[in-house]
Image (tube, rainbow, N blue to C red; front, side):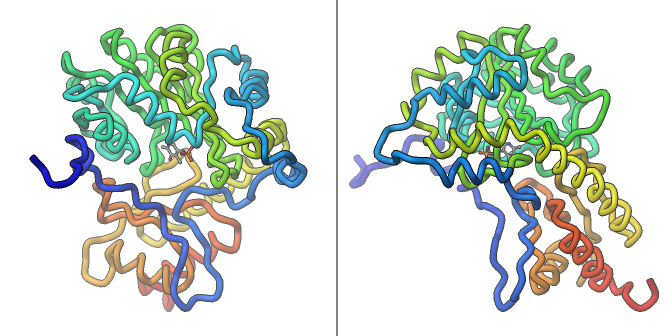
Length: 367
Ligand SMILES: *Cc1c(COP(=O)(O)O)cnc(C)c1O
């Protein structure tokens, strides 16, 4: 007998999620480019909705009706097939604990989002990892890892931190290859940013299959990360099951009000998309011109690979950038010790990243 309470098996195997840094000692101006937040901030209408929110003494609407209806109207969905959450992270955990129990397997890709592993271990399940090809999810490798114990498969599309994506044909091939009792979670946190004809977030698949769930977030293009709002759309039977374990007031009133205002502000979203298109392309070009390898991204961030020579590593680059107030994300925890993830920032930050890296690489004199 233990002398003190012991966590369930699996819990202590979890490496707690470490958020991106937001501070650099002794630097006057910080550019936080470590958590894929938008440099444009939220819609002014969302800020106004927060400012005028009243009655904090009242419990929120436990099913976030207004927000579900606003989301449904935007995407042509049935509001009854939507659940809102305290960030999509909460929904990823809820879906996992609904379908994964001790010994069950949860499958995701080599450089997939860290929350999947945490959610599977927290539910007592076994995380199973499928290799990627060229930093991209590989449908055949995922299908090869499916066993009779597999209960859930997570696909971030586009993926964080790699920025790569699977065309919708490949997503459909993945779904077709999975046993029908396996839940396929399409995490489309960055869907709004993608400008590719062969990409679809997958709403069509959610609508027609019995085992596909999509999660979305207000934390990225909508600029509301601090309010913690996510949503999922799923078949009715999954919605019913997840609602049984969801906390009754998991999304707060100010978040609901701001989310409704944000999703209706099409002009603000268009501005964010345009900003990203311009600077994603510019940064990719400029960083490649410095001789760095950059994985082509469709999101609002870039995976930058550094040489493994002394003085020029990702770790060295991170220290140099941080000393200049540029905070990127180190991603050893994602199995990528030789790369940094850069969030697309405002013009000043983007230009500063390139000039600082030019200096770091010692190309300042003869560039
Ligand atoms: C940022 C991110 C999320 C969103 O998290 P929230 O909890 O909604 O803030 C989900 N999935 C991926 C892959 C992400 O990068």
